[in-house]
Length: 344
Image (cartoon, rainbow, N blue to C red; front, side, top):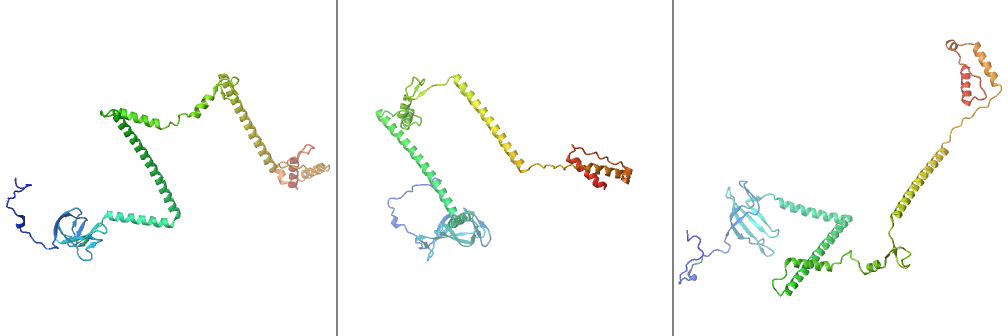
């Protein structure tokens, strides 16, 4: 067991490698290669499957002829045997597509990833055609691309700013270490605090006052207007009584405004009613003039009706007609005329 995995072998002093005979092999001899199948194969004889990744002891040879090379790249042919029926199966390398090509002895099964790549290519081709035909679609795509480019530039600027900060921190750390005389450098915590303070000093606070703001603040004088200078700005704080007076005035103004709004609404309603009455006038009843002989005619008709009773009178009493007076209205006259016409 000790001689099975030796790394060094004893060579005698009189060993001459030139005297060792060399075996001569033909130039196009097959080379044994231990390999795995690059794709799934179905045998043409027994219809059994040999799946992708299965290991085989194959034989390799260089392909000759016009199809032996592609752009100077040598193609190779591999020989294997079916695991079920021992039929020879051959396939070739395909440097043009960075793949393998089935030759004899079986068929290559369907592969999803190839179909997916082909589908992506078809989709991209369709998008290119649509962009050529539709100008608005192409414009929208260019706008989105420009927005993405602007976002990428912003991100790049942020990264550059962060790198500059890191460089400043490193420079400050090296400077502090040099001042210490190389005695181990500054403490990490103090170095970070110093770098942070340095960055805060360089960056200007947006709330910080400049010289103009300071001069304006100094020019303001607080107090009564009589004591202040005429050219300067005077300011004074309101008292509680003044604040109450201002609040009372605001409430009075609000009440007055509400009152004006209500008056305006009532005025608009009145205008609407006047317009409606002008469009739809009331129907007026015209009274008939009274004649002196009308009373005599009515009395004669009543006597005639009483002398010649009808069947209706036997069953029911006649309706007495009142004598019209001067104060009778037009509706009463109309009712009387209706009864006379019926009796006639």
